[in-house]
Every structure is written in C-alpha cells, then in structure tokens.
Image: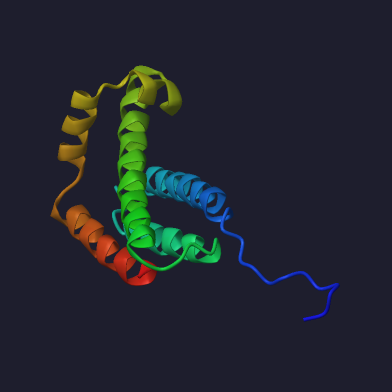
Length: 139
C-alpha cells in the first residue's frame, strides 16, 4: 500500500439512514397501493422484507442475528404502520378528516378492531411469507 492511499474500510454508519429510508418508503408505498386498490395488499409485506434486507446489506451491516432481527422487526413495524394508516384513512374519510389527523386520533383499541375486521387469513399468510423471506435475505 502506498503512503498516499487511504486504507480500505467499510462504512458502518450508513445502515441506520438507509433503514429509515427503507421503512418510510415501504410504508408509504404500501399505504398508497392499498388505498388505490381498495384492498389491504398483504403481499406488500414480502416486498417490504426484501427492501429492508437489501437496504441493510447495502448499508454494510454485517450478516448475522442483528441484521436478521432488524429486518424482521422492521417488516413487522412497516406492516403495523401501513395497516394503521389504511384503517385511519378509511375511518377519517368517512368523518371528514385527513389520514394524518385520523391516525393521531384513532386509539389502539379502535385500530385493533378495524385491523381484525380488514385482515383475513391471506394477509397473515403473506406476513408469514414475508418474515421467512426477510430472514432468508438478511442472513
């Protein structure tokens, strides 16, 4: 190595901002697709798991239990946030509120009830598939 060249090292601080970008974009994409299609779009959970796994890999987070755990937790967080947003958009629309104000006013019990009514076995199956795919991509 020459005295003027910089040592090759990987950037370890890059994965948190990439994770944040992945969580926000995945949540918004799921929300928009669900609201435009009029369905819950549970299949989006698989795309979320893929995106988060690849964003962490791109951010140079080392493979292992940490990357797997963050990918799975992020997938569950995005699924919860997207479903909360979908429920609040439908509820707020009928009350004359925008989705943001409705999401802030909707309590956890109301959200849980609406999510139980809107999500069936197919959405739970897609979430299970997403967790397996997220584990596979992040390992």
